[in-house]
Image (cartoon, rainbow, N blue to C red):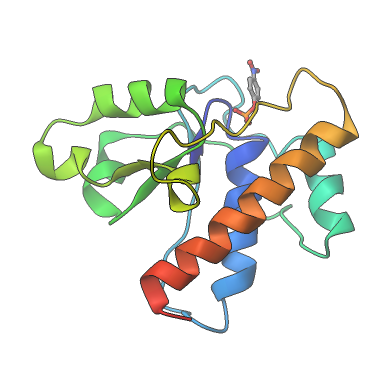
Length: 150
Ligand code: 4NP
């Protein structure tokens, strides 16, 4: 799961998916990263932690890190939150095989012209995080349906 800072959207996507599949698919390795290293080593944003906590999910085990080429080689699937992340991660890819792993996360919900998951970092506050949560809750349900048949 990839966004810009790896402190808001992708930690929420990571936490949601981890929470949903821990019993179902314990062998899945789920992680998240940012296209930037601005917040390297930091915990998720307080507002992201609070939002996830309201929904019963703890994400305080996560720390921000920048994505690397090794991630593109290692992971089977890379989900990005918006078209700017898509551009940046596509640029990092060195091979066709790596490029084919990269998907806008909302393409799981709407294949054609998938929506961007809006960046809640600069506002409008709690509601922005709830909007992100709802979108990612839907996308992660679709992901599980698509890759496990459940
Ligand atoms: P995220 O949000 O990409 O969802 O983690 C952001 C976090 C930090 C910044 C931008 C977006 N920033 O510019 O510091």
